Length: 105
Image 1: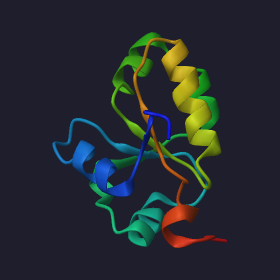
Image 2: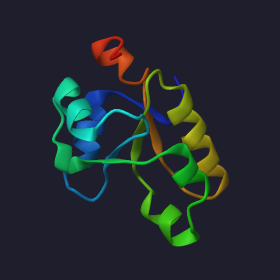
Image 3: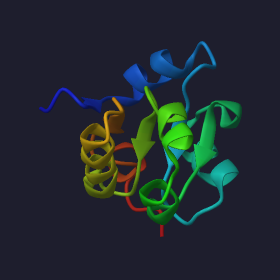
Image 4: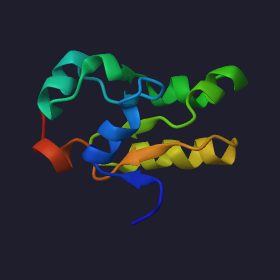
């Protein structure tokens, strides 16, 4: 398991202070996703891969310490690797949302 991958419990602990968020990079509404994984929607945000790729240096800096979540964990890990290349430490939720609740379609 790569060190950038974290479990849902680890993500909850990492976002508990309010300083970092769990970032959903899917198309479903954030409140729906939060209810599926029983996560406080106030500790979450939603971004598209495009928004992440085109983020300014100051926006990238704010992503430091964030946990990214997608459907299967592949896109979120790609985002984490991209951010790492830009000097930003971030994390990916292991297995994505499907590892927690199964397919959501």
